[in-house]
Length: 434
Ligand SMILES: NC(=O)c1ccc[n+]([C@@H]2O[C@H](COP(=O)([O-])OP(=O)(O)OC[C@H]3O[C@@H](n4cnc5c(N)ncnc54)[C@H](O)[C@@H]3O)[C@@H](O)[C@H]2O)c1
Image 1 (tube, rainbow, N blue to C red):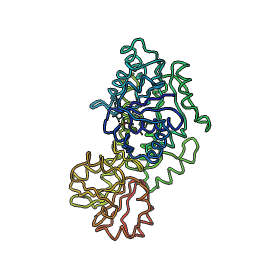
Image 2: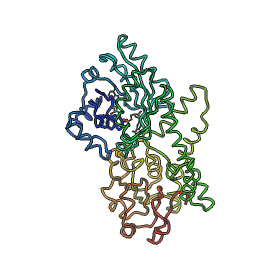
Image 3: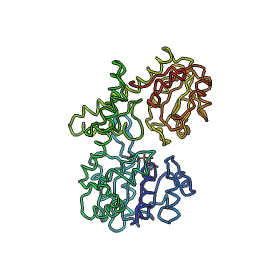
Image 4: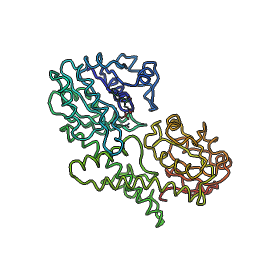
């Protein structure tokens, strides 16, 4: 099968490489010339574990290619996936669909023979139908169907998630499109991955509802963490006790600095807007968003309190900037809310992150200093703030770190360490909800 991926970002590149691994002939297209040139030169523009090898293997096998040329790619395609960004539209929280609609318009002219146009981007309900309208208008004679195939991969474990998904959701409106998509995903039959076939609207809602539900679990446990702090309970133990109930499940019950990343913040906002537009209330999701914002603000107060009431002129070593480990993605990371608030009040921030620094430099305040090693960051600091639970922050030599500091405050926003251990090493240790 010939597959074209429009958009070669976190989702397009991983999905394209994985489809090639399944045996399809894949061309990943992007508007960003530097991205395509990098890929053509064997350079992977994002950090995603295992992607390098997967891409190389499939290029060498002749199944994966990259191009700026839409016409040549689309005219050969059986399936064209739209995997462009759908960021929050400035001002109103709605998903900005301009990239999706532009892609639909651009591919319309080059369709050649029956083609399935598949939305892989996370898009509001009704988008697939609008894509169909746009393509039909631009090319009235085209032979095509639209479909919705939302993506559930997680950055940091994207390849494993794509190759061994909990489910594949296919929103279709014709048997022909369903057959093509089932054929593309056929290698997953071996591991009996559930293929859930539904209509376009349901597929579009499944993606937003899933993300909003996961965000709800996070905001819920974060709210519980505040109660735990007040009454002397341990949120870690509370989450474990809750999660052992099969109806609840243990995943996504980790208290921390609030959710971030390229999906949950924008998708919760978009879902609220979609509901509003259809005259439906979404009070739960609204509360989830509110709790998340207040959780980030509470982390600033927590750090301030740990520093004796003021961060002015205090040197803070920040370990981790990305919204989670094993990615370089800085989009909506909690650090983007917490660090500027501290810097604003005069904190001197020395930050370290294994992969996020390059992007962080563009979006965090200029006053923030970036260090090449954990040791450089913590040297002479008044406090350490563990912001992202990268593996290398889990196994630090605590005595060495403590001796390098000027102060002894350790604020663990990911509950990586145990209080007794940290106190035994001489730290004044604060964490979340314990
Ligand atoms: N990142 C994730 O973990 C994740 C997971 C599931 C779903 N999603 C969804 O997938 C979609 C893509 O997300 P992403 O993180 O990969 O975004 P991204 O910003 O990393 O990549 C999007 C790419 O599309 C390109 N592009 C935009 N318009 C184009 C056009 N007309 N033609 C060719 N290329 C074009 C951009 O240059 C960019 O490289 C979003 O809707 C997102 O919500 C993301």
